[in-house]
Length: 189
Image 1 (cartoon, helix red, strand yellow):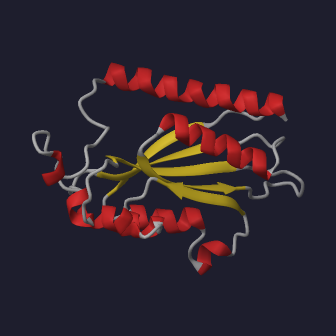
Image 2 (cartoon, helix red, strand yellow; image 1 turned 120 degrees about the horizontal axis):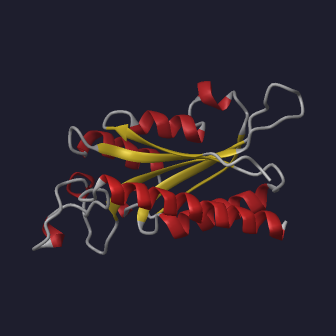
């Protein structure tokens, strides 16, 4: 069983697209690492044309000045699982933890300090904006939410209005959810 590491971070406006390119190894400088195992994305709005980098470029451009363009999770993965099991674990966690949110993930497996040691982990980047049924262009997508007329405002954010205690409880619940899914995946393997 792997050592559990689960950390969350915020990417301010102006830093999301670069980090997404790094995570996806979507730049020749980053691709040389040769450690990308798998990647995927989901819940992107239509205007992205299934391009997560385009989504993050728009988040960098249109999200409010002091807001988070995206959140990022970095989670250690069990070495005991093969690629299909790792991808299934990651996608199961995304479906249960951040349903309805635009996201991109990349599984990396760089070699450690010894020749046979590896460090499998996943980067999951997601927007706090909840994709809904209303069509919006990229500027409107990141605009302020309009509770009275949702179609006229931006997508609702799922990040504000909670106390520090609520945030700590939520964070613990999210980590526990990961632990349970990871244990189950290892038992199944």
